[in-house]
Length: 447
Image (tube, rainbow, N blue to C red; front, side, top):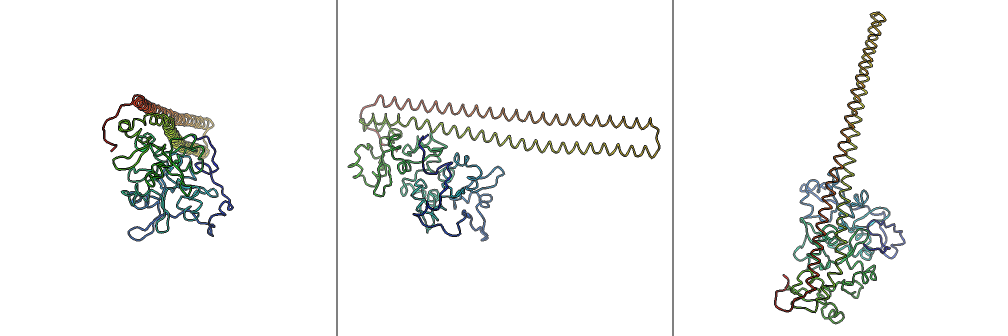
């Protein structure tokens, strides 16, 4: 993980921006705007908020409003992204890096809100918020993908991401949750972690170019006239003559769809073709896979950490739920015992009153008292047994929870170990491939 400290508020760092920080941008409206009121009209032209739609029409929402970010809580109530940021920010960073937004005066607002009220600040400070306006309203990349999935990649090649379960997720989400899949399918999604959140290469070159050059020399690219950094792929797509003239060190070639990819991409996607047609790339490809090895290992370890935190969080939630149930059971048992004791004492009082009214002898009164004491002692023993049984049940439940946690933890470690072994084995094969290159020959380009 990056060791540098950023002046930007990202991840867990809450931005406490004074009004002077926005002096160069447009003024805030008055009164200050609230959080978005996401919602839409149903078939009866009745306004329903986003929570209603997620509860009642969950399949409809991703098709019409993928920008309504949120999730269901433990009670299966849908909560918007700002509720989650306020309630469990660590969970958000670990599971929803696609919920773009930032804090202002201790309150989190989504990217669309920022682009509505502070578009200049949002564009300057968060280039990783991919999106564009439509009819005067800014929408995130996921919204654009849904409305044009076929042409999305060609229109927005630098909005790295892919769909899953009918929704589009940015590269930060994929790198966080499926790093092995990213490396196998999109090795040109370059980026690094800060505060547990993955940021793409253009973000690093925007704010920390020296760090990017030093730690990620394989991120080939350059700045345009507006000082926006683009990858070598982008340059070869937009101005190949300029790229070839100014950066002859960018080694690469075109695939069968006439899309240019650099040597780093070819080293992963089709090294056989690259070795056959560009044997002079061999050293560069070997250096590329060696350089990427550490970042891939870090991503897999980060994925393991997130899974471990999830397991620990579920364990804590289970313990809280068990404790809540135990407290309720204990309270009910205590109430039952109090009622039983009160009933016994009431019965004894009535028996004493009846004995006095009948003018019973002292010997009979003493026998009555002894009988009461015996009943009271028996009641106390039974109540103690019930209390002990409840505590025993609680202890058994705690042991079962701990055992279940241990089993899940061991399984998680086993899966991670297998994943790392497979990862290292694949890396060894890659290194061996480039250490013993094959000569020229034919072969089709990558398809």
